[in-house]
Length: 345
Image 1: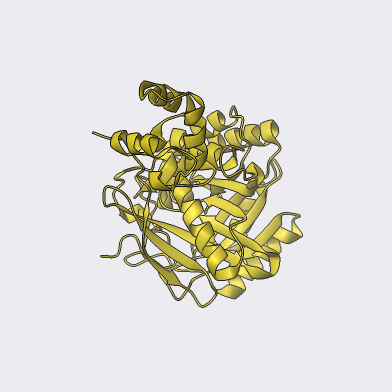
Image 2: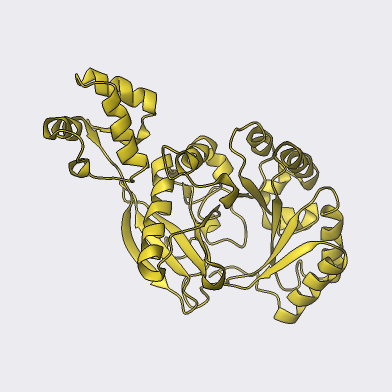
């Protein structure tokens, strides 16, 4: 059975290449083709001899993700569905802000999700498996190429905010970040990468020890344990007190910004009383709050807050000195909510 060559580290690849009777430096050439040039076809590795390429094809395969379909919104947001080698489907989203020359790709880290957040389309899906580092990396490469083709600009920012929980696929998520940021890979600044988590305190503590200093976003959505536990069952094991300890350590160790993602739900978490609870939560260390318009999901009872209520909520935070941004829903005319397109059909 052929091995997926992209699951090998450089050291492992060197061992494998040596076993084929080739010189060690050939492994570095192959590694550069895979991760710096994003090559998924051995035939295109033109500085390798034809006999060596035939050896590679005999012993290895490159299991890249394949484009399946996409939807283009009136606001230029694009949602992609990709098919994996085993037939599973995942989503990525391109969010362009042309005036700022900011092109953000939202990538998935798992097929489905195990966390069952009550408002989330992906949460209605069973978690089938983790994505490997190459499958995460591929989303960045393929969406960036399409963005360049359509809008004349490749991606500038990455958010791990698609299907799945990145910190429950910790090893592969971090390896994908290394491939994307390494000078042997895409050489992207980690400052342009944000990992979004529902809040796994143990893994946030672990993230503090890593050599890659990405930005961190907490999917908060409620500023008290009772409400948060109602919509996010993970809060029973990772309550707000434990998360604040972990996030404070992350900020002190990295000095990187932390964002709170806060979806505003009508008559649930959008009152001024809720805003005041959020103000208190924001007082422990510097944070930015992103208030997000909810994209409705079929069979979910939660609905989006009225625009004037969102504005009042945001104004209260701003008056209290909290850096706050209201993120209007993008892609309203397509399957905007995370997981909706992947789950179709």
